[in-house]
Image (tube, rainbow over the protein chains, first blue to last red):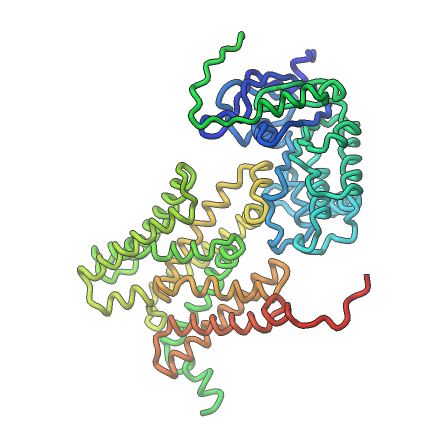
Length: 255
Length: 290
């Protein structure tokens, strides 16, 4: 029997950070599977850190993250897309090959591409509107096209839980629309999606649920209840100080 | 002097030239592909630093057993690995970036190595260590170099896909698999092995030359990775053969001659290649239709 706790991502008193300074502080939140959540908050609010923590890239300083047990082993069940700056576009590799690596779970380090798999890669390229670009080096793509290619790779990864870190930064409106529709379609198929978004207009239009973060949780719930002037002002106020000489935190949370 | 006398006769008449040619071919096949990845990972200068890190190990081997191939190789590999892993550890655990910690380690290594060699050896030995002896390769050195080349080719084939991903999108590789550290450290081991093999032929100061210069030239001409690898290996082999002939006819040391010829190929590429200096400044007469 599936209880609610079984099919949700639960952060319990979660603290994540760097050099003992918390970037996410005592966060307790439960996100049901199949949700589509925008993670919002000012710069330095810990949004990227939270995604890294859920993706397993960062160890919790305190607290726990419970992933639903029906997710396959962490690495395979989660598709995590970090911010774009981490990709070296000057490397001489073709768009097709880059996108095909979305099939890593099927190919591993050594497997070759079957004919059917090549067709799936081509279909993914078509789905993001990069049909004619397969043989081009990734360095010849524009910023928006490169982002489309990364989404094509996500299509092939086909993970139940998708974490996107600012996928729409510095991208034109039409590309954003196309990519948002891809995300919506994933969500319709039952994928859980957590996305860091900066543009409140996009959040209001597309994301039913929002998580407002300012190191600690400010609000989580239906977007129209979260995106209020009072809560946003509170988030700005909370996220301003980063105290170099902070004392040890002794907050106790009732179990 | 006929073309035959200029190009073929030295190899036909002299065994040491044939050995040198075989050594250069092995280096081109083993070290140059590794150099291509060093270049693409923006680690060219770190390769240079690592090559100096090998010196004290080789020198200790020399101190213990004289000019013994095995002792110097084992010493060099151990010293290279220690420096690489120590630098990696320092970079991960402290505020220093990997290049800074590596620079610190290699400077210490180089100083220690030169001191150890000069403590016991003669100047001739120091020259051998610094500039190699591609024209005096005996059977065992040649076997060692070719064995390292075989290991290196096999290792690169094994690591190829994770390594390519680690180069251009390490975050993605970390997200989908646990191959990232394997690719990174496996690659560094290959670098050290090839530096030791280059060290026997070209010396510790020149070993990186045959890795980086052909790779940089090939990068200027090609767009795909496969073409880049093929062209770099070809350039390294041709440069090596021409360097050997230059050394034979003009009586200069072979190691620097090989690296200089590779350098000339690099400058020609820099001027003439599509990715070079002139092509980017030529006026475009007719652009393509949109």
